[in-house]
Image (cartoon, rainbow, N blue to C red; front, side, top):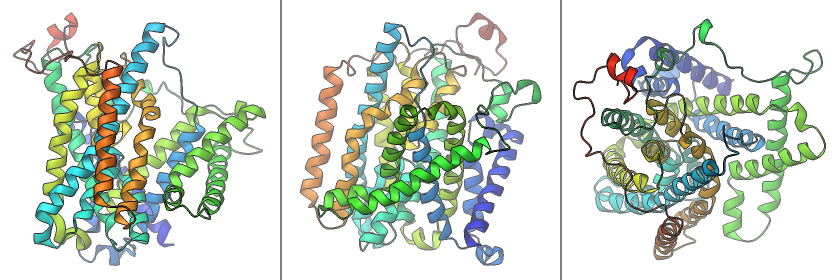
Amino acid sequence: MDAMLAFSWIGIMLLIGMICRAKIPFLGNILMPASVIGGIIGFVLMNIPGVTTALGIDPNMYNVIVNLFFTLSFISMGLTATPKAAGQSSSDVVKEMTKGSLGLGVIWGLMYAVQPLIGFAVILLIGGMFAMPAEYGILFPFAFCQGPGQSASFGTIIDTTTQFTSASQVAITYSVIGFLFAFLVGVPLAKIGLKKGLASHPEKLSPAVLRGIYKPSEQTEHAGKITTYNGNIDVLAFHLALVALCYILAIYAQQLLMKIPVSFLQTMASMTFIVGFMIASILKVVLGKIGVKQYHDDILQARITGCTTDFLIVGAFMAVQMSVIGKWLVPILVASVVVGAVTFVAALYFGPRIGGSCDFERTLGLWGCLTGTCPSGVALIRVVDPNLRTTSSAEMGMMNMFMIPAYLIAPSIIEFVSGRMTLPMLTIICIATVVVCLIILKVFRCLGKPSFSFKKPVVCPEVTDDCDNFEQSGTHSPF
């Protein structure tokens, strides 16, 4: 009953966020997702004294929901085949995408190693004045680089295995701030770039994209194919059943792996989402081998991933309890600003140096991914490339394969917080990761001279949303 009540309120907040995005132009202009809008409203609601009691809601249930939906989203991603981008048969396009994906993924890995060191240093410096242990500052990569789902997942692991019992709350709070950074900084940056003519294929965003909903005449895309007879089993039920199968298999796999007496491996095994993703990826191959994949639709599976992501984002906002983190609000905000500033400088430095015609779009996507999630990055790319004519949006998906090595830092952080790894050793691992990433970027020519500069003069000094002449000329966006 408690879980269903909490889940229902997440749904209500999503609806409210959807209405606000459609009716308030400012929210549409900054492309703020309904999940973030609803989440902010839900956060305020959950922290009004007496509201949770009056509504019969258990605030702790939101941590459980976020963890569950995060694991389900990863399983769903594992079941989904990676679509081929248009024109991928061209060797030049493949090379461009591979280079862009590698550059983005390796830069992400570099920042995944930098953020915990910066966060730890800031909290170590000022946290003592608020009785906040410096170990909480090391949670930043889970939040900024990975988003609310993984911040809740890793935070819960730390809560249940160490003396730091507020890790999930602190990590989720970091992720909430990161999401705000992604859009409140990213969208103005995109529009500055548009005014300076930095976008490769600038076009005005359609009203449908700004309001976030499609009118009947604009409803041209389909959510998936009907691959099963509904009188037998509904196609959505079939796809959800596959997710459920992977979840059960992941739980059993975890139990087996936890019996291996190696602490580092046990730490890896405790991450249900990683085990679930691996199981789902294996099952995807098996389905193809036995001829069942033909009844599985990747587009519909992607909709399930999107659905779970929307719910977990709102749940993450609503999971933040000011009664728990309120005493540490000042160091949390200061550390977030410092880590955010360092991340912003890094994005502006490395993004233009990847090398290619769409480095500006890549820089926006990189910023969104370093402070929120890959979908946040794609949303920012759409500001300057609404029809996704560059390879940058596809690279945001492909970059995940180049992120994997950096994931080894996650169990190292947990080992450190658990007292099984020293701070010098963790520092060496992070610094070594940074050095390796820089070498890779240099070897693969993703660290050259900047391909664009924000110092470039404005193309049209008097730009307005109705700058028809420039829109027709195709020289830049009318933003």
